[in-house]
Image (tube, rainbow, N blue to C red; front, side, top):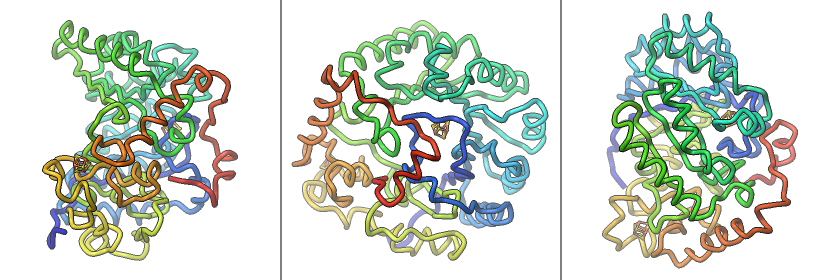
Length: 375
Ligand code: SF4
Ligand code: SF4
């Protein structure tokens, strides 16, 4: 464990779990409905001041849907005044001409706009709301206000065959970047993994399409294709290491080294209502728990690659192996790799692809997970 960790670089301010959409791949915790009292404006300002004083330079305002907070403009203005580079991660729902002008005046630097698909039918089905036309209008608004725009689309079995059309849409909407992020299986996506997991062949075809476009369009729009690590033989370098660069604060003030860590067992996450960010980052047991490599067991402990991937993702280790301190089961060196292969096999059988309905993220469904949710 490092005695004096570097300060956090990224502050993720999850302002609210409220969201007008209902994506079945949402990374929010299944039992998010148990969070009733959101941090107020003054508390968020205090969190930002403390994190900035420690050296944090980037802030992401996310959720849920951050536009559901009426004080978003005020928070952005304060973040800008403090010297943060400010990012808004939004579905676009709640954006208006008046609000985007206010956000511009407040100093917002960057907007990431998510789409569910390139077709109205699938976009609106996955979000359970008619937002396709609205999102296109918001994209035009973002460009009209001279923002650099990242368009984001979460990929899975249902929209992977549309990847070329999704890129065409990003070009048409003049996005500078398109993030094609294959579903990560946490939260609602973990619940729906049998309905979302693509086949290896689908992924291979989509990656080939992306590569063709890269050659064709050059720098006109940067295409980021984030491969799902279930199909890799090494895990992702999750959060660039636990408590290394990333500090997430949930709507109720819970501070986390990773935005999925809320329900990891045996981890007493500190709350910004009760503790200073400096103590949370540098000294709290939760942030120390998996920092560095002294916590690792074999095969990670003696592995020459541990400085590259930090043993993978703690939440994935817990979800799949039942042990948050285990080697990420995605790794081919993990004795539990067979469990990942089983999940893929089970999810991609024709029987799994058809009948089970998707579980959409919704307050009523979330209330049903309270007390039994796993991440
Ligand atoms: S993934 Fe969908 S449901 Fe979840 S916060 Fe984003 S827009 Fe809302
Ligand atoms: S054994 Fe651990 S450190 Fe080595 S490659 Fe696998 S996850 Fe990474």
